[in-house]
Image (cartoon, rainbow, N blue to C red; front, side):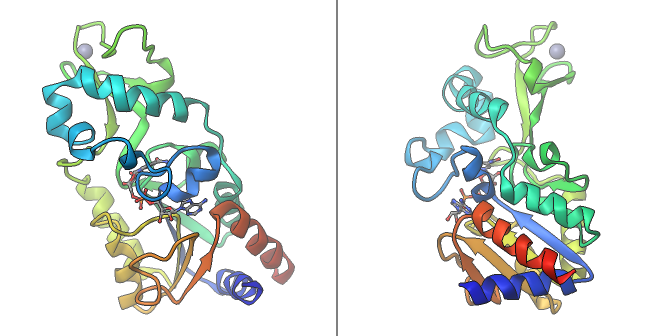
Length: 248
Ligand code: NAD
Ligand code: ZN
């Protein structure tokens, strides 16, 4: 493991076009549960019943009552952890420009990263289903469920529900960046949600080195990724950054 930490520090320090791809696992140390795996949200809820756009449109109250109310409670108070902060440090060192994230929690921006492609949208903002007016999530009060706009319309988060399209501009830019990078750092994703999980494949096909940090193996491990640093994103990122700072 020590050898891989040093290897990652060297690969990151030598990279010219580094990109990071992050998933729910990077926010686990910020107390946001992932969807899959141990303690995952899908152990308790059926995604088709709560996270599909059709389910939301059919019964917004039910989805707000169960899933969205809980998400808001957790995300409202979450703070970035060492993995988010490590990526900010990489940006400030001039090594990292863009993060492609599948997360909707806004923690990369809260940490200070400035160029974040939110592949699956954001929970930081909502908009009214009727008049389209946006509202910051922190200003949404859950005194009434579902929360409503002054016009009477129901608020929805600006996340991409299952059954909705990834914004084409996000998809296109992610594909371009993935095909042009020389190192991709993949943290905390189970790499099973398409098309986000194609980004490391695109990177690899174009000659990039792919580094994974995850406590578990994923479909990328040893097929697409060059190596897996097995463990928690925050802990491992801290150790990599200590090594990397000595190389600069
Ligand atoms: P996922 O839930 O499918 O998988 C989480 C992955 O993180 C697993 O591979 C797990 O082994 C790993 N993991 C667990 N703890 C970790 C840690 N401490 N450090 C590093 N890795 C850890 O997540 P996904 O691949 O991002 O895909 C699921 C979808 O879930 C995404 O589209 C995302 O929008 C959504 N989601 C987002 C959040 C969030 O915004 N924080 C939370 C839950 C789900
Ligand atoms: Zn409205």
